[in-house]
Length: 345
View 1 (cartoon, rainbow, N blue to C red):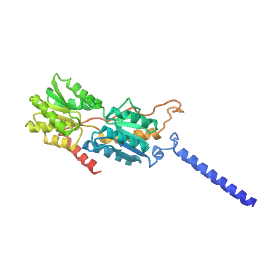
View 2: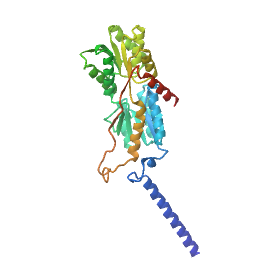
View 3: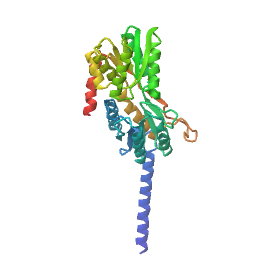
View 4: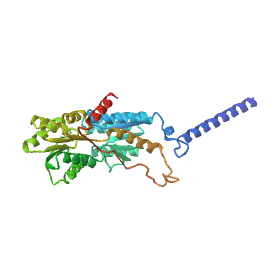
C-alpha cells in the first residue's frame, strides 16, 4: 500500500513539474522583452480590435473598412467595424459603449466630436488602448492619432486650386463651421490662397455633411456671386454639391471646383471635367497603421529602460500623419479602379 501511495505521489509531483514548466514556457512566450521572440509570436490570433465610426453608409468609409479588415488579416488578428450609417453622434456613442463592453484589445475611433472624450478616457482606464483616426481629440487619453494632418489637406487643395485658376479669382469655401477638423482644413485653404494677392475668399457655406444641403448652399452662394471663380470644399459632400449647382447654372468648366476625398461620384466628375480636382486622404493606410500602433502598444515592449513601467516611459507615437494626395484628370482613373476593389473586398 505504501508503494502505491509513494507511486501516486511521485506521479502527481511529475505532473506538477511538467505543468509548472508548461506555464513558465507560456509566460516566456509572451514576454516581449525576450530578444529571441518575434512580435508575430506574441499576438494571440483571437485578439479582437474594433473600429468605431459614424457616416458608415457613405462611400468615403469603404477604404477605411477595407484597410481595417485587410490589416487584421495581414497582422493576424480579428477586426470589427461598428457605428451608425449617418452623422449621428449619439448613436456612435452607443456603438462605442458596446465596443467597450466587448473588451477588445484595442479601439480605433473617428474622433469627430468632443462628446467622445469621456468614452475614450473610460476605455483607457479599463486597459483598452484607443487610437483616434481621421480626426483627433488630443485632449483625451488616446494613445495616438493616425490620419491626415487636417491643415495639410486644405493647404494641398488650396495650392492645387490656386494654380488651376492662375492665382486670381473669387472663391467660396464649403465646409462644416465649428467642427475643429474642418476648421483646420479651411485654414489650410485660406493660407494657401493668401500666397496669391488676387485670390479672394468671398463666401463660406455650411454643407452639414448632407448632399442636399450642400447643393442648396452652393446654389445660394452662386446666386449671390455670379462672377464666382470657383468652389473649394472641406468635406466629401462639398464637391458634388458645387458640381450640381455649377451644372444647373450652365457653367461647367467655367467655375472650378476642388473637393475633398475620393468618392467615385467626385472622381467621375473630375473625369468628365465638371470638378477640377479633389484631395484624397491616405485612407487605405490609416487602418493598417492604427492597428499596428494598438498591437505594438499591447505586445512590443522595447527596453528603453530596464524597467519601463517604473520609469514611466511612454512608448507610443503621439502622431502618425498620412500624406494628402491631389487627384486630377491625370491620375483619376487609377483612383476609380481602387474604389472598385474596396467595394468588392
